[in-house]
Image (tube, rainbow, N blue to C red; front, side, top):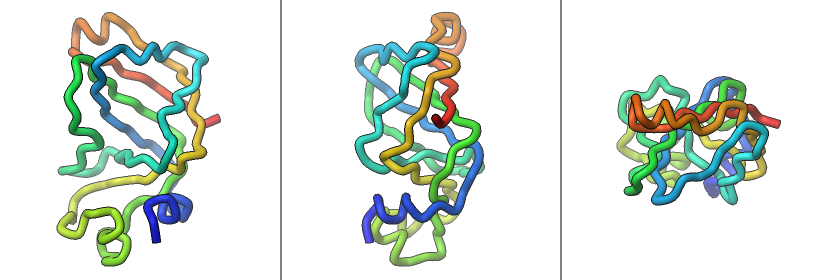
Length: 128
């Protein structure tokens, strides 16, 4: 079993989000594709109390939101699944794995007002 195999076991449809930090602006504008996924990615469904999708350092913070995504919501009672994903001691996270092949289009891109007011960009996506 691998992360990619688990991600292909679709058991969730709905809202997902992901926070990333970058050293350069991503230039995510309306109508372009978000194609950062060359492998299955961890997102959250927003219900988790502890889940953090990224912990890297960077000047620019992006909050990516997709309202109608399909993925695999991690089953924290499944020992084999948790061992593969490295989340054996997790109980309250809400991790959703999104398949690498998933294509998302930017429907609301980088807005400088967001960065100035909140300190991060809010990017809205839709699966295409």
